[in-house]
Each structure stands twice: as structure tokens, then as C-alpha cells.
Image 1 (cartoon, rainbow, N blue to C red):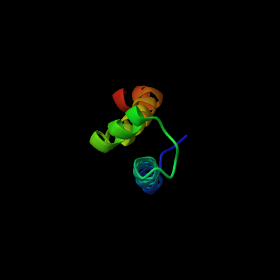
Image 2 (cartoon, one colour; image 1 turned 180 degrees about the horizontal axis):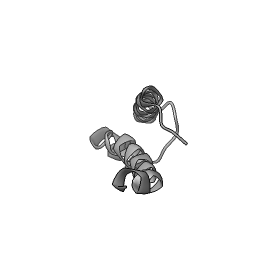
Image 3 (tube, helix red, strand yellow; image 1 turned 135 degrees about the vertical axis):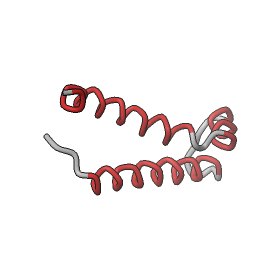
Image 4 (cartoon, rainbow, N blue to C red; image 1 turned 120 degrees about the vertical axis):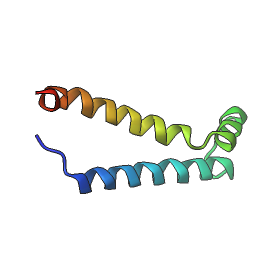
Length: 70
């Protein structure tokens, strides 16, 4: 029932690297994807990691809200 700052930073780095490598592989055709997905990842590569990290932040806020507001 605690969060380690070092672990949280490792999560963020891993999530960002995962999405950028996945986007790179989709854009280069190494992972099959529809044309719409490829064009989306060409323009908005940053959306998926931000969304993923944002969801995790909301879950952390929900879990720890009582602790932080007391």
C-alpha cells in the first residue's frame, strides 16, 4: 500500500518507450495495421503514452485521495 517514486518513474519510462517503439514499428510496416492507424501514429504519436499514463494517474489519485485529503 505504498508508491515508490523510483518505481513510478520506471513505469513512466517503460510506458513511453513501449508506445514509441510500437508506433515506430507500425509506421515502418513491421507490425500490420490499417492505413488509418498508420496515419494517426504519424501525426499523433504522443497521444497513446499520454492517455496511458493519464489513466494510471487517475487510478492512483482515486486510490490515494482519502490519504492526501486528510
